[in-house]
Image (cartoon, rainbow, N blue to C red; front, side, top):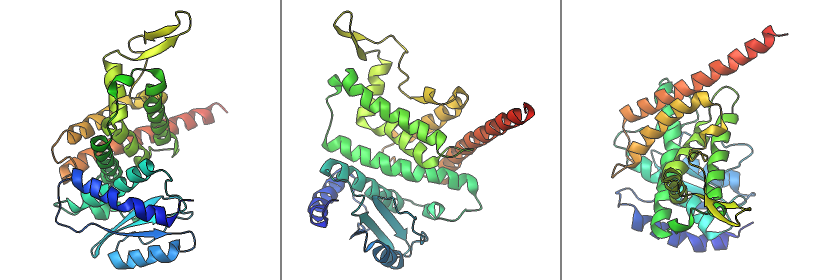
Length: 302
C-alpha cells in the first residue's frame, strides 16, 4: 500500500500540471483528504458534512481509489490510500480524473450536478445522459491533460506489441459495458469506453492507423512485419458484442465526438444531455427487449 507521505509529495505537481493545461476558473480548487482503511468512514463523513453533498451514502465495500464530493458548501476530493495507484503516472491520471469532475461541475452555467446523486430524478432521460456524461467528461479531461504533458510516439503505434494494448482496453471496456447488467448497458463503463476511444492519445493513434490501413502484424513465414488485411481490425471494438447495438452505439459516439471537438468541450447544456440520455435509454430498451425475447423463446421451447 502506498504511503500517505508519497501521496502528499505527488499532489502539488499534479495540481500544478492540471492548472497549467486547463483554463483558469473562478472557483477555488477542492480540499484534498487522504484516508486509510482505519479512517475512511470518519474522513468521508467529515467531507460530506463540510461540502453538503447529497451523496451521503458510502459504497460498501468501498472500491474507489478517489472520490469527488460536490455540494452547495464546496468541493472535496477523497483519496483512499488502500486503493490508490502506486505509480506516479497512474496516480496523476486518476487524480486528474477527479479534478476533471470538479472542473466540469464548476464550469456548468446551469446546475446539473444534482443528477449525479444517489436518488433517481423524475427526469430519467436527462439523468441517464448525465450519468454517462459525468464520467465521460472527467476521463476526457484527464486524457486531455495527459496528452499535453506526456505525448506518445505515434510512429510506433503501427506495431502489434504497441497497438494491441489500446485495442485490448477498448475490447474489455465495451464488454464491461454490455455484460455488467443483465438487461441494460452500464453507463459508467460506457463513459470510459467512449472517453478512451475518442480522447485517449494512444487509442486515437491506433484508430487513425487502423483507418489508414497502417497497422502491422508479424508474418512468421516471411519473417517480417506485414500490413494487416484492410478491415480485419475493428478499432471501435464494437464487434465484441452483438451487432444489433452497433447503430445506437455509433450514434452516441458521433454525438460525444462532436462535443470533444468544441473549444470548451467540458461545458454542457440541457439539450445535449437530453439527446445523449435519449440515445442511451433507447440502447437500454433495445437490450431489455432483446433479453426478454430470448427468455420467452427459451420458455416456449421447454
